[in-house]
Length: 270
Image (cartoon, rainbow, N blue to C red):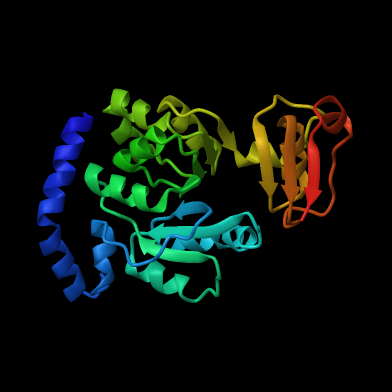
C-alpha cells in the first residue's frame, strides 16, 4: 500500500506545476513561496533545538498560537518552525509578532521532498494538529527517531471508515505517533482501532487527579494549570520534570507530595 501511495504522490508531483499555476491565478497560492511546497526553502535554520508545529489552515494555526507563544520564552528552544497548507494561514501568521517562530508551507508528501525537508530542519520534536496525517513524512520522522505528537486529534466517522479500508497500512502510520491527544471520546476510540498508542482524551486530564497514576511522561510542560497540571504531575515518571507556565484551566492545584516523594518528580514554575 505504501508503494502505491508513493506512486500516486509522485504522479501528483509531476502535474503539480499545472495545479500551482491554476491556484496562483485563483489567488490561492503565493506567487513565489509555492516553491516551499516543492522543498525549496527560503528561511535559515538556526543552531540548536528546533520544535516543529504543523496545522492545515487558519483554525489549526490559531489553536496552537498560545502554546507557541509560551514556548518562545523557553531559552533552550532556539527556533520554532510552523508549517501550514494554505495562503490564508500564512497571512494570519504574519499578524503575530514572534521572534523565534518562522512560517513555511508544508511540503508535498513525496518521499524525496520530505527527506530533503527533514534533512534541512532536523526538528527535535514534531507536533501535528487535528487530522493532519501524511504517511511519508511521518515514516521519515520516525526513521530518525524524532518524537511525534498528534495534538487536538480529530477523526470523524467518515474519515475512520476510509482508513479502515486499508487497516494494515493505517496501523503502520498511526502507531508511529508517540502521543495522541484526542478532542473527544469518539476520536479516542477511532484512534485506538486505527493502531495509535498512548491516546489521551482531554476530558480524562480535566477530571480530578489521583494521588499517583501510571507513569506516562518523562517530562511535562503545562500551560493551563488546574486539574490538567495535577494529572500531569501524578502521571510523571520517576525523576521526571514538570514545568508550569499558565493557569488558564484554574489557579488551584489539587495534588499531594506523593509524586515528589515516591517518584522524585521535580516541579518548576516558569
